[in-house]
Structure formats: C-alpha cells, structure tokens
Length: 433
Image (cartoon, rainbow, N blue to C red; front, top):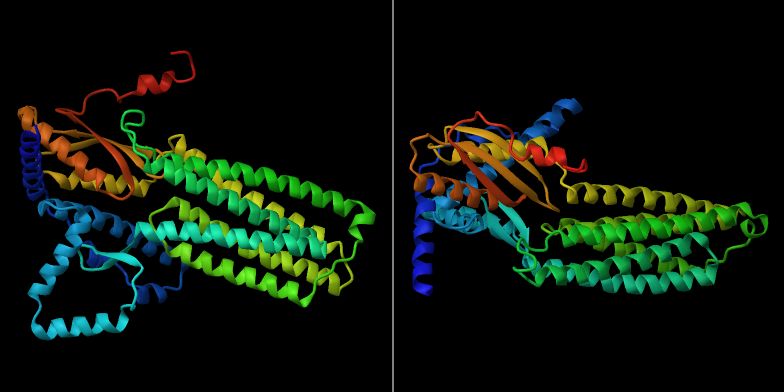
C-alpha cells in the first residue's frame, strides 16, 4: 500500500511543479516600486507618508504570493525555497562579492541567533521565531509572574496601598493567563483527526477570550472596591507606608516586566505570545502608575490619590481587554478579511495559471487567527476534467502555503452566470430556514 501512495504523491508533486512553471509572470517588478525608510522619512505630509507605507505593505503581500509560486516551481516549501535562492545567489557571485557579503554579515550578525532566518525570493531576510523560543517566552513569563505576584502581595499588605493591591491582582491574573495559554497549547498540539478533522487552532483565540472575560470581570470588582474606599471618608484618609526597600522592589518589578515585554513583542508566529506581550505592556504601565500614585499621595499628604489611581488603572485595563475580547469574538464568528487580504488572494488566483480565464469570486473570512478562503475560478468549457481538477487542487495547495491562510477551497466553473454560492443558507440562518 505504501508504494502506490508514494508514487501518487510524487505524481501530484510533479503535476504541481508543472502547473507552477506555467504560471503567469509578475505584471511588474514590485520591489522596484517600494520606498525605503530613508525616502519615507523625507515625506512631511502624514497622509502621503501613510499612503506609501500601506503601499509597501501591499507590495510585501504581492511578493509573498510570488515567493510561494517560485517555491512551487522548485518543488519545495516557501521556507525551503529561501535557502535555495540564497545558494543560487551565492553561486552567481564573484569571489570578491562573496568576501564582501561575508564581511558585511560577520559585522552585523549576532554571535547567538535566537530565531530561524528564512530568505525570501527577493533576497531579503525575514525572521521567523523558532517554536522552542515561543515556549521559552511562555515559561519565563509564567515564572516571572509568580515572583512578581508574591512581591506585590507583600508590598500591598505592608503599605496598605489600594493601587499596589490592584497591581498585585493584575499579576495574579497574569498567572491565570499563562496557565490558560499553557493548557491551550497542550490541547492544540494533541492531534485528533477524527474528532477535530480541521485541527484545534481556534482553541488559542478561545483561550484568550476566556482570559479576557476573567480579567475584565475581576477589575470591575477592583474598580467598585476603589470607588467604595474613595467615597468612605474614614477609609479615604488612611495613611500609606512605603519604605525605600519597597520602592526598590517595585522598580525591579517594572524592569523585569519591561524586558519581557520587549522580548515577547519581537517574537512572531504566536497569538499567545502576542497576548503575553500586551499583558507585559499593561503590567509595566500598571506598575509605574501603581507606584506613582501612592508616592505622590504620601508626599502631598493626599492619601485619597491611591484609590483614584486604582480606579484609573482599572478603567484602563477593562478598556484594553474589552477591545481584545471583541476582536477575538469577531474573528471566531467569521469576520470578513480586510481588503488587502482580498487583493493578495485575488493576485494569487490571477497569477497561478494561464488556464484560468477569470476569477469569479474571492471570499475570505476569519476562522480563528487565520483565514478560511473560498475562490471561484473560470476555466474553458472544453478543459478536460483531469486538467481542471489539477489546476483547482494546485491552487488550493498554493493558497494554503500563505501565512494568513488556514484552509482554502477552490470552486471550478465554466462561466460566471450563476447565483452566489451558499446565499440561501446564509439568508436562512436565524430565521427558521
């Protein structure tokens, strides 16, 4: 059984390479249209500058499509093609050019690289974070949050500060978020193709939603307690006590969280680490503010500033996480892709094969962190079934190689005169059929 399957896989791979080789060439040299950072810096008008920044982003999207098609021509993945292209460029260089390139790389490359580097088809470097670094960031964040929570609890009990107590509570919720993310990743990594035939990638944004609900609900309670303390004259006038040792511990907390924030922000490829980076950022702001308010309250003999600071911080956290909550809910419920995503997907269908006479429909919507894509292409009526099938299957494979696509479905037709697919089902949802 293994040999026929292997032969069929090799045959499909050869067919995919042949179809990619017949793809239409890029209409223009997109990289030549890009404005570099120096040119952008010289543009004074903010609207004009933003236009060219968006144009550069769109060029990156089109070049990703070109990279996928070029990789298919070589029968490799886009990541593997980066190394292949780099080797081809190296073979074409003269010895003096090689020495110059190596010298430049030696001067700029770090001694220890923490990310896997892939070279795109245009020769630029695109860093993709290794999986072990993502796990390391999550584990270190968890350990740091445990230590910071214990420190802030001690300082809150020692000083009597409501703002520091709110900050300690936020650190406790950081621990809860790490636990949710940890178990979510373990669930995702456990494959079960029968119970979950399309994988469990939606577990990650679902975990973020659960945490966002917990943190917004919890800080609503902190907000109510702070308002109660502020409105009761006896509690509002309570003196605070912050020693130099307590201030040093608070400063160390801020420094540790700042380092974790900048590190997690540089890690690419995980919405969980993105959420952790956002959480570390919030904790830095929270820790600074929770330190400033009680210090100013003690110095100015105005202890009511402490609950006021807790109220402001609670409102800030609730607002930030409500935005994250709503964004993930929209994505899990099938929010439409952006116009830039649609342009990129249309360009892929346009370039992929000369046999495609028209692109009828391009529909894309979120299915968690990434997109589910439906594309209708028009082929000549006389096109044989096996050729039409190969074009559709190959286009589907190419679409699923793109970073923002989770699954793709390609519908083949011989004309564009038909009703919109699935419209009857969509119109009937929630209205009894």
